[in-house]
Length: 119
Length: 214
Image (tube, rainbow over all chains, first blue to last red; front, side, top):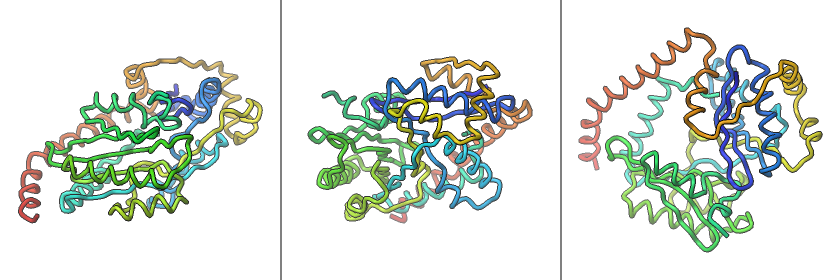
């Protein structure tokens, strides 16, 4: 079994979230996404694969995480889309101590309890 | 031209998205300048002590062309709104090309800093206007083989148009085995318990310290 959550705007559709069970591994995800690309063809101009995980591959250090991101990256790359890079995130803090404490806490929680259930 | 049409190519820049954020308890903020718009939201975290003004996308420019002056105006607006709503910090994720230095300079000029975010900075885009056979040819060999195998196994697509159905089905598709299902729930619960503990004990102390430091 494979699932995929897509969100569409006027001319583009974005692949937000998905997963494949053990039985469908290596077949289900690719097959489902291909069918969804074909189904979207008549209504949209662009299909956004919702991230490429290329930068994450450079930043992450542990080999376990490298393997995980490499798998997701090659899965998405396999659909032959063109790589689009954005400027990234920009923050402006009005209360710097609180901002730093919040970011530190968020990072610490994400490290302690990594989200394992995203694709 | 409707606002939905203006949100061309960016789902986070539509009133529907703003409505969804409102349903999640966030305060949507829409900045309109002529035929351009920027949609964001104000989130309150840790009992309203941390106020995050977030713009995760946009702005939408007329005819899709980047406009330096308009972008600067939007950054100025974001800054003013941030001060007006007493935000702890503003997060802006502009959907402009990474080589666009004009946009980066405008942001830096208004006091924004580049950070390594949690949102992906890059994505793969497939042009759906290409014919089906070209799309098929662009696929990697392993992907094509997997699709052929899927066709041979007579798989079928079930379409559901509500988020609830997806939330029900998705955990079943991500579970590798029954053991992992139990562990996953335990992990989520333990994370919740941990957070509750942090909230109860640490936060009042932290806020007291921060207030006195400021």
